[in-house]
Each structure stands twice: as structure tokens, then as C-alpha cells.
Amino acid sequence: MKEIILKGKNFQNLNIKSVFFDESFYNELSKQKTKEGGNYLDLIASGKGIRGFKHLIEVLLEKDPKAKIIFTHDVTKKSKNNWYINLNDYKKSAAPRFFKLYRETGLDGAMYYLSQKIPDHFSYDTAIINENNLKMISKNIPEVFKKISQKRKDKDYIISKTADIITELGRKKKKLKQEIDSLEKIKLASNIASMLNDLNKFELRLSKKYSETSGKNSWQKWLKNHSWMFGVYYNEPYEKNQVGFSSIPDYLFPTIDGFIDIYEIKLPSHDIIKADTNHSGSFMWSGKANEAISQCVNYLHEIELHQLLLVKNIEKAYNVKLSFIKPRAFVIIGDKSKLNTEDEKEALRKLNYSLHGIEVLTYNDLKDRGHQILKISGYKE
Image: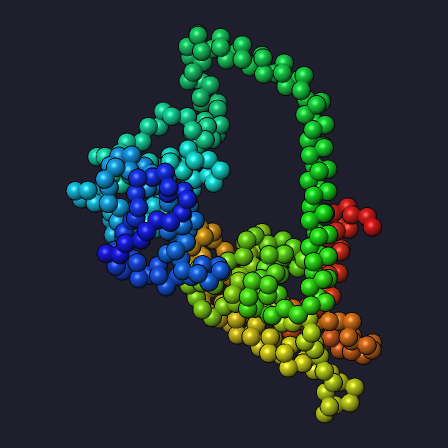
């Protein structure tokens, strides 16, 4: 059994200094790394690694102030003063009930889970009208009205309150519409300002030197955080170390319709194509471009070969089901303005056309796409 000292500020008000992990679970987590490359166990100890982690501990301590909390792969149970909690099981059970902005909902999720797993010590009061209860009521309003309107007192109250609501809505309708219109304009202006700022930073980065993938200022990290410039709307990218499969890029980009794209990042300073000295007037991919294309071919092959495993791992890690049918790959490389002749520009188009499932984009293409998205959003220079 391994002890973890709780270091986060969120734990300061709790009467507990540490929690425990059984050895096999500890060894498994110690191999996991954070997005920044740190130790995942340190992230858990800081209170940031697992949503609802602090609330689970808080609920247990309210029941047993002297509780010794042990996280395990085994069944959730109580043995004397030891509380064994299957952490992965808890995350699956409590996470759907946990809302980031509401502490009460986090406590509710912990109580719901513990009442299911240890019913002798915890009970879940469904009569409390929390956010989840309200959602259930909203989905069943006709049945709710049918039940409560059977009593005259309730019926009169409903009629009275409904009349008040209709009157108030009528009075506020015009003002509400004006407010919504104003908010939409503010939101649009804010999005445009953010995109303009991103494009300015992008052009400034092009005048400096950054690495492809290493370091917090790498092109890979920056483009991952500003993927709107690709011209495709993506959900939050998935990291390789969370997917549990090594033969894929560092990030997988899920499209809003449930498919996957991958990106191979090279530098803006790298050549895109070069003259074919064996054939006059012909061109071929540069060494760096060819290297990136070959890597994408390998990635696409591995993804299609192991798509069932990837679907399973992502569903387990992120609770999302994706399709890995015919993934697309993009190579980001080079400066198109260095293509001085029409022959070079035509050669790039021809070489791109010859690829299957892979497209080579330049940093100029990203900038052009960014400006086009700005125009579509209503920006006028």
C-alpha cells in the first residue's frame, strides 16, 4: 500500500493529510504522465487530476472523520475504518452527475455512488431537488402536472402561478429579444477579436524560430490550441498517452461528426518540394515533406489496423465513441511564398493530388484559411 500526501489547496479545509493506493494501482498510475509531462499522481495529490475527487473524500469524512481511504482496482467496500474505493468505477458512476461549476452536484455524485456501493452506511435522498432532479422533472412535465393537479389546492396554485408567468413573459418578451440580440453581437465581436489576436500571434511566430514538437512553445502545441485555423471545427484533441496506444501521433483531432483527423507538424522554414534532377522540369517532395508523408502513411495504417482497440480505449478514457473509418492526415510544412515559379506552384498541386487520404498544407494555407474564416464570421477590414 502506497501513501499519497494531499497537497492541493482544496484539501486544506478537510481533516485529512493523505490517502492510500494499493500497490498495483499505484504502480499503474505512476507510469501515467500529465499533459505537461509531469507525474499523474502529483496531479491527483494537487486535487486537479480527477473530477469529483475532493468531493468523494469530503463525503467519506463526513461519515467517518477517522476514515482511512484506500483507492484500488477491487470492489468498493468498508472494512473497519478502511474505506476501499474503486476509483475508475467511481469516475464512471459519478462523472456524468458532476458539473464543474457546482460543488453541490459534486457532493451529490459522490453520495449517489457511495449509496449504491455501500448502502449500509450511505443513503441517497431522491427527494432533494438538485440540478439533476430538475432535469428529470423537465423531461416529464406532462406526467408531473397530471399527478400534482389531482389535488384542488395544487391545481389552484398551478393556475395562479402559470397566469403570473405568462403575464411576466409577455411584458419581458420585447426586452428579452433585445438583450439576446445584443449578447449575440457581443459574442460575435469577441470571437472575431480572439481570432484576430490569434492570427497576429501566428504571423509574429512565423518571424521567429520554434521547434516542431518539443517544449511548451512548439508549433505542435500552438496549433493544437488554435486548431480553428485548420478550417475544420474540432472537439478537444485526444492525447496519445491517454489513449493507451503508442503508434499514433501525439494528438488525435475528433471532428464534430465523430471521425478522426491527424496532423504531422514540420517547420515553416522547411522546403516543401525540390527539383527532380533526373527529370528536367519535374519536381518531387523535399526530404522533410517526404519524411512527414511517410510517417502519416504509417499512422493511417496503424490506426486502421487497430481501430477497434482505439475505439475501445477512447470510449474508456473519454466516454466518447468515435469512428476510425478512413481517417484523414494533414502535413503542415513550409512557406508557399518561396515557390517562385508557376511550375513550382503547379507541381505542389499535382503532388498533393497524387496522395491518398493525406494533404500537404503550408503555413500560408493556414493563414489564408484563418482570414477566410474571419470574413465568413462577418469581419470587415
